[in-house]
Length: 87
Image 1 (cartoon, helix red, strand yellow):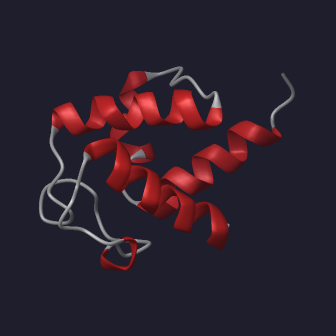
Image 2 (tube, rainbow, N blue to C red; image 1 turned 90 degrees about the horizontal axis):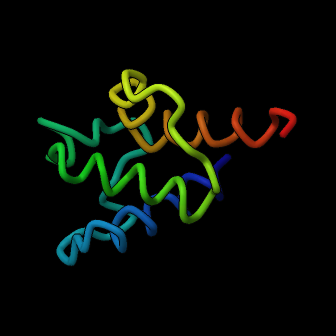
């Protein structure tokens, strides 16, 4: 899980073109939106694309987005759960 979270941080920075941010600047449990990293709804779409490109995961229910994309840890937990499910 630690490696996945580290990978996610780098992927988020690359996908969202956050040139001023380093992976170590993003806390595992830090909110990605609003007061945390300050992402917005456009960034949320980019995170959905990131899941599809890097992990072949499609968001089945868009209403889950705020829960899944709350932090790097919640994203990693979701990815891990999706990868364990049989095809």
